Length: 295
Image (cartoon, rainbow, N blue to C red; front, side, top):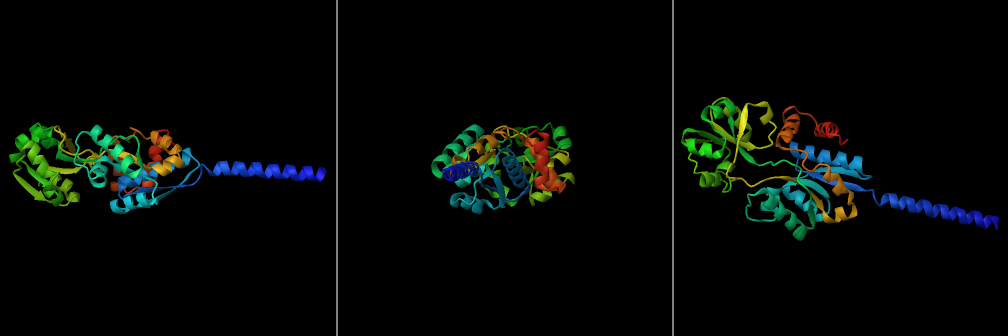
């Protein structure tokens, strides 16, 4: 009798331990986070990975993929989550016509990604990585230029520096010319990486870059306001596979901690550390998380 009691008690303990182990493992696993392989994306992927590992029992893996392979990874289940941009999702994934009002674009992307691809679009991170026109501050101040409408009024006196893609793509310069009636004195075609130096040397008066460019903080340039909202918004938003979020609902709480936390200027400074100062994205991410009380 005592022997049978001992065996029964041992069996109960084994079952209880197995149940506890099973309960623990249900909240564990590996989340694969994608990055498109440039500085900003690497920083965001590292921020997400480090926050997930702090706030949950999950481990993480970061993979670098270009747009096409990344989306294939989402569809195949090889990628669980990444930070996308509303403009990219709207035009390239959903094949929707351009939408220029940020909230409307976000709502269309959120609804479309859920219905068509079972991908959850969570709250905006806070910055808009869109195209912008930029001028040396002293030149803009001297001419009283603050908006693209101001640029248009003086465009016949201004030399524009831009990539061939920007000049020819229908929703870039042709659209700007149509909306603002700009007629630049001259357009110099150049690689985006050369435009800051060309402006510094006085070869061009105005040029285009991305609003979160890491070069902006260390140069004496100002962003010209797109007052008629000609450019499609590219708000940064988390994408999570529906199946992944269903299995790990805690990811929604993790991403909620990033909602509205990084504005354009903050992202510029983060990008500057990686793109200009050549710091590791993981180190930059860790410092940002610590500074913001998230790590």
